[in-house]
Amino acid sequence: MSRKRKEYRIVENVTISDFAAEGKSIARIDDIVVFVPFVVPGDVVDLKILKKKHNYAEAVAVNFHKLSDVRAVPFCEHFGVCGGCKWQNLPYGEQLRYKQKQVYDCLTRIGKVELPEISPIIGSEKTTCYRNKLEYSFSNMRWLTSEEMEALDRPDVTEDERKQPGLGFHIPGAFDKVLHIGKCWLQDDVSNRIRNAVYEYAVTNGLKFINLRSLEGLLRDMMVRVVTTGQIMVLVQAKVETPADMDQLMGLMQYVSEKFPEITSLLYVINNKGNDTFGDLDVHVYRGEDCIYETMEDLRFKIGPKSFFQTNSTQAYRLYSTVRDFAALDGNNVVYDLYTGTGTIAQFVSRKARKVVGIEYVPEAIEDAWVNARLNGISNVEFFAGDMKDVLSEEFVASHGTPDVVITDPPRVGMHKDVVDVILKTSPRRIVYVSCNPATQARDLAMMDSEYRVAAVQPVDMFPHTQHVENVVLLLRRG
Image (cartoon, rainbow, N blue to C red; front, side, top):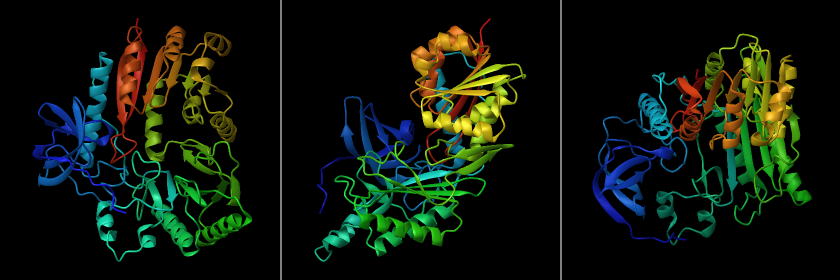
């Protein structure tokens, strides 16, 4: 049962100096950069070196000699084990300061472009319970903390007592290890009540949790969406191979339906594949509607189980408002919205544009975009599905009109060079670049610097207590 114990080097009295990527902090030992999680600048600690390369090392703090003057007490019982909310030990004002610095450092160090003064980051009014979507994983043998391991590593503890099922989040970097969650602070507490009730029912009634290596078992995954309208969606994924499996799943669904009548969309998916993705699978409605609706100003957006929607609804409104302000539309503009997703930005700006063209890789997202456009009575939008670098061609632009404004919101990897080249050839007057990764955004800005200057920069915090930051940049055509 005991995990294999390794001997690690301990380095004493090390001062944590700064933050780094992925929510980790930095220390320096003998001119080697050391990355350390769950500490803050100013802490003085003893470090256990876990991995050492030529020019960097990774370590964990095993003893604190001095706590930083700038520190907060983590509010979550799972802090330090769960991979989320790594900045709970830092006051929110300091989190915003470091995120602002992250944007500045990326744009100057990687982009090397001339910048105006960066506007102060827009903080989130809610720093807990701000997510509208969470996904929980089942596991037949949950991850045990070191303290739990020691408590169970006794001769009188049975093997069944050691093998406890779990429902929660994956340990970072480990697909087969799930940390059982008692209370998560990321979503409205109804999410905790639903998750804990499902767990108790499943354990009490002998429903098998999935073995993440052999894929044996019934229960795989559960998604909970809670939007500002008060509507709730719950989706359970299960591996069903026999009629008895189906009976057990239906028993669980009936229990959830009766215990939580406030759920407006109760769904399930039969997933017998080797992974938890269900984009290619049928979603079944057990009770209620097949979707929920989020609102923004006077717009309504249908959110299905497969839909993408910004996970912080309140901050999404502030983000989209910034995009609309930067676009400076006058009612006569042709706008291209690249990586449009379900068309939320496209529709948000459409009433100030003559025409908006949205392009997105995922066909299901484009279907949602058309549904939302009809729902909101918007007729001056068009949506197209396909790989951006293939769809956005010179022929496409010739057919659908040269854009006056391009809005682009690519994934973390940024824009493909071919996409950048087409944007430069179309020569829009303004480009509004939304990014969840300032590093790749900075790289793309450098590619456009000969033709466009950065006129405004507005960071937005979508994810309090994490290192992630959203950034909006306005580019104006030179000359």
